Length: 248
Image (cartoon, rainbow, N blue to C red; front, side, top):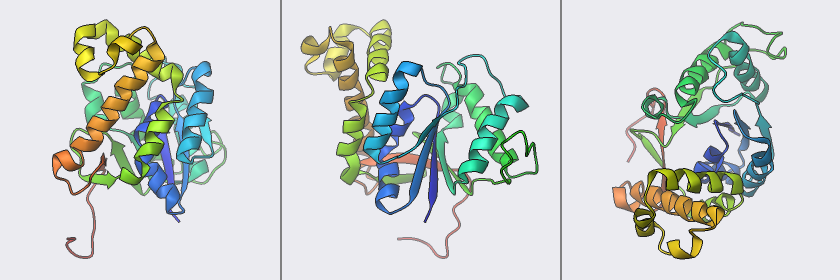
């Protein structure tokens, strides 16, 4: 059995990776999730969405947006989590993508995560990190990367992904309002066919936008990208693949 930890920054990432996570659960693997930052009102929605995917436990790490760095006190929170869960695989954001993303905190997160992963396997701050024995994740996968090196076929789990999106009311509403600040309503109408019907309901508009985002990505990494998948989720594995022979 493989143990997988979805280390989400804001919560939506659990749904964005729902295809791969559901595939692991379907295979009998153990999947847990943790969220670095999430507003209190959004947390029940994140837990519900994770439950739809099949994840039974979500831990909220209570990081304050814009008010943390890579100092030891913050690393201890991540190291404690890693040593407690002891995952074989960690899925998290792509540090390359984060470098030019001006979304708050992403660049700090991109430094904090790998620093914490590396030190979690060392004899460092044992008591401060809950007394757990050192553990370093064997494999790290970056979600929605700039340059993917593997694709997960998610056609079987795509409906689960869409259903989970539908319970993230806080995130969908935020996304709609944020998009309307930067994109004209006329342009959104080219993406959301029923825009006139949902334009005054921020949750419905956000859900329609995210549904289009996810379908577009899945097709791009599947049939549209000639990857061999039909609907795909893209990942980049940290480091080299070691294989016994060339794969077909």
